[in-house]
Image (cartoon, rainbow, N blue to C red; front, side):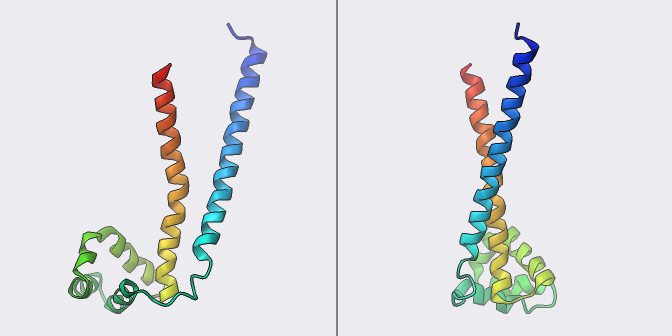
Length: 130
């Protein structure tokens, strides 16, 4: 049976490891934001961004979808993203930089999400090996 002192040391080590992991993930998130924003305003608009911006001039979500489907039928294959884009543009504006910032935000949110999924998967694999 482990000594109470050993249990305390083990939980302190686990807590320290978790804190270090959070720090590393936080630093990677900051780096991810910086890399995504680097030169974002200097890029000329891409074709799909131009189509989105034209469709975002619509007054309603339904009109936006009609315009988008007419100009870029492939856009209907990603309904969640383009619905988020419409809502995002309603909040922050419908210009090239604003539309790009949605992708920056979603891409940045993926970093800690992928870490959490990976950690859970690896922990499950390690537990099954014991």
